[in-house]
Image 1 (cartoon, rainbow, N blue to C red):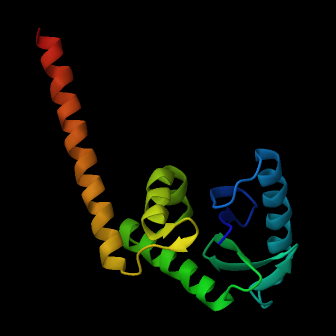
Image 2 (cartoon, rainbow, N blue to C red):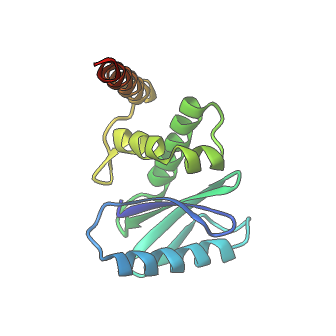
Length: 158
């Protein structure tokens, strides 16, 4: 996978993950072009399209489009399954994920994606293992916040 984009029906980019080195200018150009192309397609049209030297695989869930670019020889159906698995992970974590969850918790959405995909390849196929890693990270963050709060409280007493 070269990259994954999440964007709204209004064309607002909500999440982007690039697995190939590109300049910011090129990323913006690609994003603008792809968002326009995907949004212009009719709902009954195929979710695969050839674009430049890549294949684009996208799926709409509620108000969000999940869009991936893959190489010509890569399998579109596996990519659709990867998109679906990511949505399932988001759903499990957020409890029926919505666009606002992604907007206000984008760091969690990125973290979930990074636990699932590494370098554009599936790193962990088990939803249970991905969610366990996320839970452990959440617990660690809570502990760090508590320690930091305790330290600040102790400093105030001195």
